[in-house]
Figure 1 (cartoon, rainbow, N blue to C red):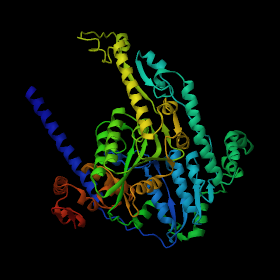
Figure 2 (figure 1 turned 135 degrees about the horizontal axis):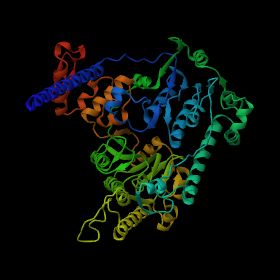
Figure 3 (figure 1 turned 120 degrees about the vertical axis):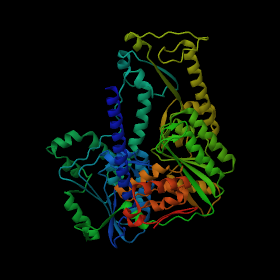
Figure 4 (figure 1 turned 90 degrees about the vertical axis):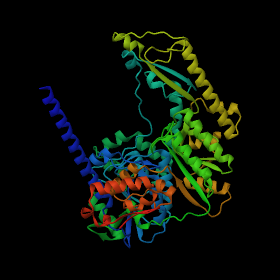
Length: 622
């Protein structure tokens, strides 16, 4: 009986293994067929509107999608890249085929105040050409409306709404919950305004954190009011009044939100999508039952010109996400990952200057110092370093920026937060409540003190606090030295306080207000370059990441991968894996050939795969 069931079990396991392999091969075949399918050629109509439609969360780099997201979907729109959004507007400015711009922000989920300013500047430059700009929305969030406000004509759906609620929000606090769970959170910090640990140690916001956050939000809100009100040719007081008195205005309009927005001058028309399409069609003509149009990503593909590397280059390195030790994927900053790119820029003779594009809330102090050390070596090699701050460059994000030759920021960048904090949870009381005891022996007072199951004793508390104090002192010193400020001045603006870019300029934490293009121009000037090209440096993608990115490209429409592909001097967009193949290693090529031979026999391959040739420096698909 035992042998029978044992054999039955092995049979089932074998069948499951075979089934799993078959499913894997079918899925892989589906993926490869998508990858190698020939997309339709995109052309720009002779007269058309550019549909500028940012989606998801605006970011500097495109992160590889997870395989599960591609197969099953997340229901969320794909994130848009800042370089693509800016480039499409810049190219369209002087393109006679583009007769108008249509702003569609219906799927925009996240954009920082600093990004709003950068995108707004690009929209204003397009507007200065005299080409009309249209915007339509079934509703507008506050951030969406900031971009739509650059339009000459804004249309809101009759059942739409537009609420301007101001900047701010709530924070959850867990002290009492943790106490009920008998979990202790030990907080070590330097800086009375460093409030990241307050949710675990308090039930409300401290007065220091409240004052600091209110100061920052007031500065950002003032920038928002000034921009949006100016775009709509109204005073900031009028826009503030709209936000303050919205309930009363809505009651007077019998609850009609679209009517309130129209009567207060925030929109120009109340109409549905069909009426809006006819309005734009009157400007650019009709095509396929709508106005003549091209999506901004298709436009970039249609107008893309391969970059020919020049002798002199300004290297751009993106540092986006939380700073962590070691190697980290795109979307996070790994100390080893970023250091490798910095060293690459240092060793490349054609790269004469470097711009570090920082968009980070901070992270590990040790990892931050490793990155800053690599940047110091870059500068010692004689190459200028300019930092361009994006939405935020706070705490560790400022740590890696402080020693640059120049620091540029947006007026709405969130920066500073010069302080240090550490948190250690321990569970000795929770275990005791459950009837579990923890005991042991050691040769010193510190032997068992670091165990989260037994708690922290006083000697270990002193160790952690001393370490935090030392890290803070290092932070103050590197800022004072890097910014050429007296230590006392740095201490007065540190303590964990956060500042807008505009405020940071006043107190000496940044040198100039401006965008990435201006920072690149500044780096070129420091290197005494007149004729130069920018080149993005990015770590080589793994074989799996390239396949996933290409699959996302095939399933979601053509995407421009400039920030990741430029480092390999490859086209910034690609519609088939053939464009990626020259960058693959010999091992990766062999793996791809093996997969193709396994999944798609030659007599069943699409025409593009009839011949698969390997050579010393290429993999050509014919």
